[in-house]
Every structure is written in structure tokens, then in C-alpha cells.
Length: 493
Ligand SMILES: Nc1ncnc2c1ncn2[C@@H]1O[C@H](COP(=O)(O)OP(=O)(O)OP(=O)(O)O)[C@@H](O)[C@H]1O
Ligand SMILES: [Mg+2]
Ligand SMILES: [Mg+2]
Image (tube, rainbow, N blue to C red; front, top):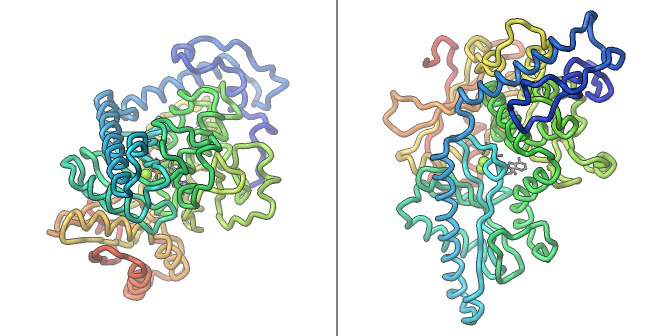
């Protein structure tokens, strides 16, 4: 299908997008629009009834807000307070850690007195679009003398491990952005590390200020990228509350439809943020409903692999930069870096089909039986696939399991590509299940299979190949990995 940009082809959603009162006060949904479209500027079936059109748009926007409330999409005040308290305590740990490290490095007294480190939140929490299950992404920013290998991964690790609030702590040293991962009072924390060439890191250090970025190392630069990305989003997006609202909805939609999760080859939070911002920046005054309609319309017909990027003039800048991604989405903060994805041919197909489905379901604003529940309906795996690959990961205890599952998931792309080559289409359902019949702590994945020609899959050779991939480079204590093929009727409820 040929792509037409939303601005070049007026559509039903354009009518709504371009003629609506601004969002911030919700009751304005109920007011009549200040301007009505002139029929000559829009391509609509005749007869076009503007007031019915706007009424339906208002109704859909209101019912979407109600849907968000019903789904508990915005965490409660208690949950928010808990997160704030966790971050406050984490900052205290980091403050005492840096003094300790300064002493260990035998810095002069006056330097020990002034040195400081901080914690900057980013990711979905930093952007204010987290849900109850989201982690807190918190970047530890410290002065030049604190090394990542010893001071961060050993000294700070040990201090955190001793805290009664901290559980399941482990180090992920070999990732592009190395980090520590743990739970603090039950809240999941991702804690990467950046080192600045200063002695004193202010609590709310401005990481866009070139003063703080002088001669920083490569890992620190990469680790700062999530904070940078959020700063750019805050800078670019005019009405942040409305943007948060739309992004929360779209993330829930992607989760329900099984297309959320970078490690499984789907979209992550940062990808959803850029896609939502792309639409939002073009129509900042549109209603929620119109934005969702336009989101689906835009990406259902997007001419991939044309990259999605937020800043004008970026296309010229990326000439010559090779991106092999099937769905390139550029970081909000960079003209040169795209957000890494694990998207494969299968997951690309699944994501695009979901955009098309979203568009099909939302495009007719006069559709009488429209319900958001249908748009957000969980993906019906057992209706779509007759066979599944069951991957069961287990370890003797929960602590070892968390590390083992994290590692195996980081290698899932290799398995996915292998399955695509050997048997055809594969849909890696990102949901993690537990096999309650097993005594060992475990996590189970069920991936939908659709073969190219016959139903034969040599499971032993697939397992062997994947074992080869996951054995390479793992430093923790390896758990077990079992694979089997199940029919849809054999799946647990
Ligand atoms: N593949 C990636 N490419 C670029 N940046 C990434 C990538 N994955 C993660 N990040 C950065 O790290 C941040 C935190 O990642 P995380 O996986 O926790 O997602 P999130 O946006 O916080 O959403 P969630 O609510 O699912 O946690 C992202 O917002 C982004 O800035
Ligand atoms: Mg996160
Ligand atoms: Mg995270």
C-alpha cells in the first residue's frame, strides 16, 4: 500500500485533529469546537455532518479517559509516594557511597567534604508514563574518581546488598549500558552508571551542559542517553500532560496486543515514545481520540524502513549512516543514533499488522458499536496459532532465576532468527508465565509458531543451537532451559 503522509492527505482524523479545542482541561471535551471544517478542505463522504462528527470524537475521547481510569493506568498516590521514597533513599545510599569511595581513594579532606554524586531518573518513570509494574530507571552520576569496575560494581553493590530493603541484586556488566538491577522495597530498579569529570555533581545536574560532558568516557555517554532522550522529549513536546496520557494508552495497547518488549523483538518504551511524539508534534491540539486514530493511520501505512525521527532535517544528516533495522526509530536526542531494536521479520510483520488492525478499528468515527475494550483486547494467541514453542527456564532459587532469565532473554533474538530460518514465522509472546506443577522456581514462555511448509521442527537441534548461544559469555550460575512443542489445546488456561 502506498504511504501518504498525514499532512498531505486530509482524512477523517485530520478533520478532528485540526479543529478541536486544546486538551488540558478535560471538560473542554464537552464544549462545541471553535471552528468547523469547511467541506472543501476535507475529503469526506457526502453528506458530512460536522456536529455529529465532533460529538462522536468527544464521546470517544471521554470514554478513553474512562477506560484509563477503569484499567488503573495511572498509579495511585500511595504508589507514587512509595516510588518517591525509594528514590530518596537511593540518593542517600549514593551520597554516603561517594564519601566512602573518596576516603578509599585517599582524597584530601577538603575534597572529601565537597564531593557528591546523585541519581537521575529517566525511562518511563522520568517521563511520567510509568504504570504500576514499571521499573524505575535511575542513573547513578558520580565524580571522575569513582571507577565503574570497582567502586560501582563492587563497593556500591555491596553497600546496596547489605540494605534490608534491597533484594535480587545483580550486575549486568556486558550490556551496552552496564547496570545493576535490583528491587528496593519491592520496586524494580535499573541503575546504570555515568562518570563526569567533576568533583561535585549537583543533585539535579544538567547533563546537556557541555561543562559536565567534557572528556567523558564512551560508556558514560551511552548511559546518559536515556536521560538525554527524556530531556529532549520534555523540550520538544508542548503539552506534556496530554502527551503522557496518549503515551500511557499506547503503551497499554502495545502490551495487550503482545507487541511490547525490546528483548522479545518488539517495541520498547523509548520506541513507543518516539512514535507517539511524532504524531503528537504534528497535532498538539488534537483530542485523545484523534491522536490515537492518527497514530494508527500514520504507522499502518508508514513506508518502512524509512526512519521515524522527531527533528526536522535529520534525514539529510543520516545519509550514509547504515541502519539495518527493519523499523528504524531514531533517538529523540540524536541525529545519528537509532534506538536499538531486536525486530526480526516475524515481529515486524506482527507489529505492522497491529498498526493496521488499530487503524481498521478506529478509522470510522461514526462506527456505532465502537468500544475501546475491543481495541485494547488481549491478543488471542490460541486462536491464531495451533502450535507453540514452550521455553521453560528454571533455577534452584529465585535469586539465581532472576539473573538466569535476564541473561537468556538478552539472547532471545538469536533463537528467534534461528526459528525463522528453520521453520518460518514465529511470534514470541512477551508474557512470562509460571509452571505451577514444577517445584523449582521457573519462568515459562510460549511462542506461537506458523511453519512455512510442514509442521516438523527438530526441537533438539533448536535447543542445541540456542544452548550454544546462551553458554557464550554468561558469568552467573546457569540454570536449566527446556524446550518442547505444544498444541494450542495443551496450553494451560
Ligand atoms: N533499545 C533501546 N535503545 C535506546 N534506548 C533504550 C533502549 N532500551 C532502553 N533504552 C533507554 O532506557 C530507558 C529505560 O528502558 P526501559 O526498558 O526501562 O523502558 P521504559 O521506557 O522505562 O518503559 P517501561 O515502563 O517498560 O520500563 C528507555 O526509556 C530509554 O531511554
Ligand atoms: Mg523503565
Ligand atoms: Mg529499565
